[in-house]
Length: 510
Image (cartoon, one colour):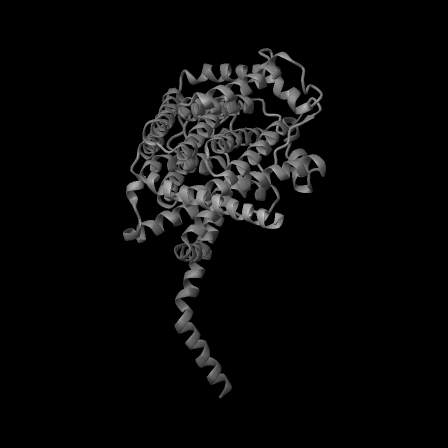
């Protein structure tokens, strides 16, 4: 009798759950096949499918929470990886969340305004994506068509630029959300600053020590006895340039905003990120900051802003170039070496570029997207090109796509920057909103200058922060009236708080 009941329960369970068990078994077999052919990364992607279904369901129910999760994961994914707390490939969580947010917008078509995606920036990035798709035909190395390598490369070089632009256009479309975006960035940057302070005053943790010494990163981060701190970022160069771009953005908002609490908050954050920039010892960061403020001065159209900012920066650069003020500080001394034309580090980069140029004359389309040293046999002359450190994101793109590709990439990004600047300069009338748009334009220009000198342009968290952020500029003219209403309410709240505070003081005197 017991066996019969037990047998009935088994058959009932099999009837209800047999399909699920079979599906999971098939996924297990597929994951083993992926592990055999693509390694751990391929297996991880297959095993992530069930979790992805759950993530998509939760994302559909809580869209903005999903967006902020994307922003946070993007900002700290390399930090978590370095600490050994990220079991998946670094790019996978980002891509899953981005595609989930886009899929939600498509499913809920009535509630989604896809017109926000139709702008110059989207078309320019699509132009770059089309070029990268054509690169699948590139067989410069004579190895045949390597679709797997190309697909991995195009995801990182093209699609990761496109996804954030679409996601931001769909979800960051109100004044409140634009402010929330800046606040989220500010708090993330503050944690990175805190972690830098912790590295200086408390020391590196075990995971960071392992990354520095066991993985041979100490050579780039301890130079002539000077320690280059990297906070929560991939390396010191990425940290320093990101902090320079952040400080430019936050100072611009502080200068142009009419709400007092925002002016105070962003001034403090700007000062702290500037301090962190110096701790990175990244010399390029100074030029990034200068370039960012120059873009802002042009867009400001105000002599009241141009004159004092120019004076402050002129004194700052003069101090670095013509005095020894702060020479006792290791980081300032390293920053000052950026103005030395005989600097050994800069000369090494020039030598590397000259060596690469000799080979790239025979590769106008590059060696191919996704092609690395391991893919090229020893007898192939382009093996040498793949072994020379690119030292720059633009050089990296040049090697993979040739002078044709890097020129097209530069043109596409120049179109994006000029388009965003023209929106700020000609279409936005409100000074505070203009400042927020100018902040994105300035930091985007600063980032690309950094990408010309260092390989940081497509490192985490820069793509989602700066490309996504800049895409909001093209939406700003359409929400300007709504922004003015929002700003007026914020100013009225401050005025009311000030009035109540004065009344309390008068009452206490009586």
